[in-house]
Image (cartoon, rainbow, N blue to C red; front, side, top):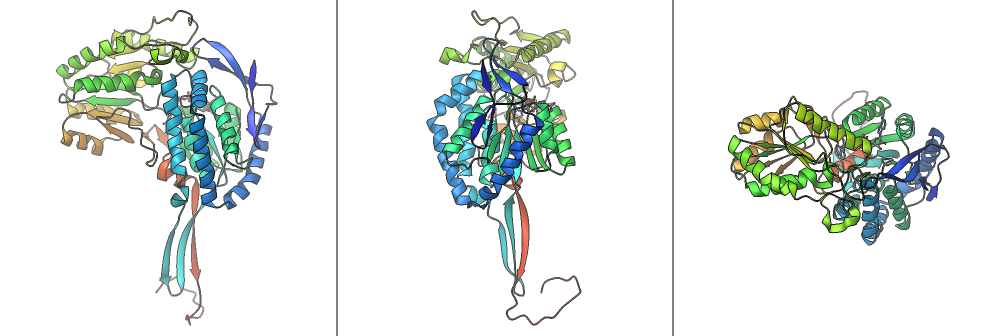
Length: 499
Ligand code: NAD
């Protein structure tokens, strides 16, 4: 059985704890590898070595650091097929979807190639007699990235790129369910010219995460995962004086107005609801048609599209629309939630519970399910299902639909499908959600904007990648400099304005 270790000081090293987690093949339900879970001592070693490496890396001029990003981007492109296969093998998503996972991470690296422009500070010449002010951005030092299972390439790249381009060293703690991609990315970064020790990949579970949160050398923590863990990590990191940005779960709604193109809306819902088996934080999990006629017409269009979806292993190539969910526990939880929806009175229009696939009977497959007549008090509405289940909540009016979205505790993404510009504009302006799509179902901002939700979908005040990431991974120092030529003034004890 393959044993996956860590990446420390530019080398793969075996774990020493004797503790391992199973890395599953979600399509077959078999254990395909074991990943080492680091001890606090191994973590401390990785952090101390990173701190040493960070000094030289921070002193490397930003243009040179950007060149490492350029070489890294080229290597990601060259290794696209290998990376996509690695993602699919551990996560279970299809190859085209896995390529998207790598591609959307690569786009963040592409922005990091221009990092020097983002790292410039501000300056004011002659702010007073002989006085110049300038504010510079300096890296935080050693930072940590803690990432979820659902984007094994993209989210580590969202963390690595801006953190390293800004001159930090990083301890990356990938999800123990999908560890291989992060280790391979570290190898590619070494080939791209990153000095050893600047990126350390430490595999582990809660013990390593807690070690990161309490370690005095760690200056910043970027987390992505479920809301309870995001909230916990934010609280513990912040109370230890660290900068923290923690992104959590989601329940994304799509409003469908009576004037929307319903075929396009149905296509969008199928892609955004069932793509990657619904295991995306920007998946649409709630459809909100406005008016009974819109709802009936939408369901009529959704059912045949959903019934046509092909579920299977990534190895079946283009014959598959989505793959298994990540674990048996996840599958059981999703099936339990579907049962609860039925028990609480929602109408199960398409039932994915009985899905099986010959030759893959032990795989973690769940067929696509569609609920109609869901109400906000039901568990299927309240919980993030993170599976191939779409719920329909019928709204009487636009105002009711907007209120539903606004009252939801999550605020990651949302969308509206409409032909009316005024309605779309009102929605974008009033809704209390961080990322909004207009006739666009998964509005993940492109890499030169920043990504982040509101409410219980994010803790901390700066978003991921784009301009916010460079603010997060640097701190500002403001320098007031005076040169005395031509200044006659003697000592003053007053705190006064500059003339
Ligand atoms: P998760 O919260 O279980 O795990 C995320 C990370 O936290 C992993 O590295 C894991 O090892 C670690 N972790 C787990 N339990 C921990 C604990 N008790 N203490 C300390 N660390 C712990 O999330 P997941 O199941 O890997 O990912 C799915 C979740 O991530 C979903 O809720 C999804 O919405 C969310 N997500 C959010 C975004 C976003 O940007 N908002 C993006 C992707 C995924």
